[in-house]
Length: 365
Image (tube, rainbow, N blue to C red; front, side, top):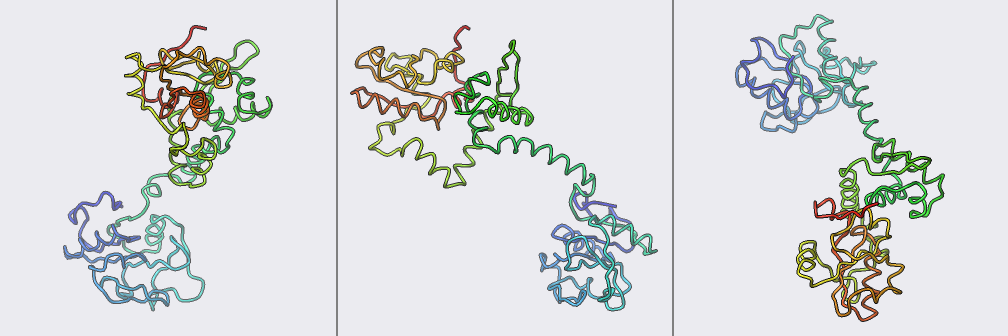
């Protein structure tokens, strides 16, 4: 047997009749090549019409017209021909006196092209060489094992299939947290938060370290943070409802919104090193301690109104928070602008900053 992916030229096949099984695009191409070499070709498959250059003239197959087909597929009742039937891929009939077994209970055999060939051999039909045109997986693997593979892969999809679990991943992208901290930040009960974290753990997205009676969770790797960012990007690109929900949460970035003015990462670093701006981290203090932009001042957004005097008078302020879809920096810029300060927002946040390989400072425990 030879799979279509391995076919190169007619010389690969011995002289004599050739049976091409399941001929779609690749099978029809191979059939044409073999026929031009003078081979006795018998072509099967419903998809021969994809290749009109091979010939024309409808052929009758089990009471229906198959449309354009090569002339070597015309009814040759003694030939080694298999015709697919309309009841579904993989069901087939051996030709009878009219090219079919007739209307009475056609014999149905498997879904793998190999089964067809094996059945022909058992019936004494000569098959000198066989070109298998079909799925690589069906040719070399066990379908049940393939199903197991995709079921295992689906564990990641199941872990991601909850808004609250995505929120927990977003929080853990800022640094390790206890179950109690995560539950409080996500507005969940301890039991519910723990159940979500166990699902994430079974999906391989988080790990947990025990510290006495406390378990501290963390992302299983930076690739999980990148996956979260990718999921967000795909959702925004293909689901208009996601974009609408984002704009309702953050506020539309129109010119009448003070938070619409953004500063890129390179510009922030350049201006911070030149002493032209104050970099303001408005996340909770625990997240700041777990990692922040070097030189940033920590004032959580809920404390900002009472601590404005800690910011140098007249200095431009660039605020940042967890990520591009975090509202804290937006709220901070709106508050600062309302108090007469020149304020801008980092274009994204700590999630993207880390993934971009930018410098991060971590406070000593």
